[in-house]
Length: 176
Image (cartoon, rainbow, N blue to C red; front, top):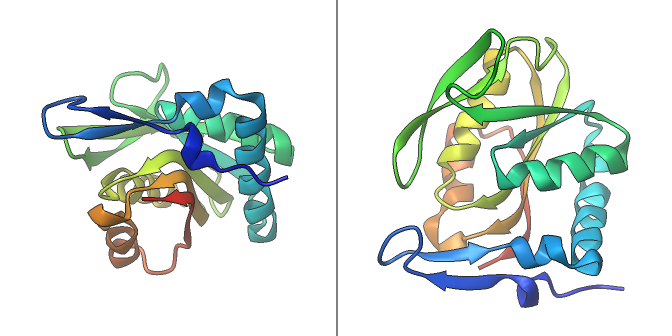
């Protein structure tokens, strides 16, 4: 049974700063039906891409990445903001709409040549996705694709990802 995921996503005006309308996906996660539907849809899309590992982007991306990894019976690696990982890590610049940050991943988080499917909750300008792809490639992983629950198409994030990484397929379940 299809579920309208948009009906679970709430607009929060002026968060995290004035003029921004935040898309709150937590009601999707709180609903067993909506969450399971989202994971089932991501899994159906992911299977033909033959990933060997799922990578989740901090922090809401972890929710969907972990559930997807479990559904596909794959391992999970995480992409974190600088300073959050305890062991030796690789790092890339990860500027976003609000700040200049860095993404990190344990150096052994991806094996060379391993097919990695990167998952996040939302694609806005695409900067986080581009940085995450850069990080997986830095560790010599093969990016199978990039998936998200929501795409804010008016911010042209998918176009920015494709400009930076033309060979990486991008998919979102819901578009605004």
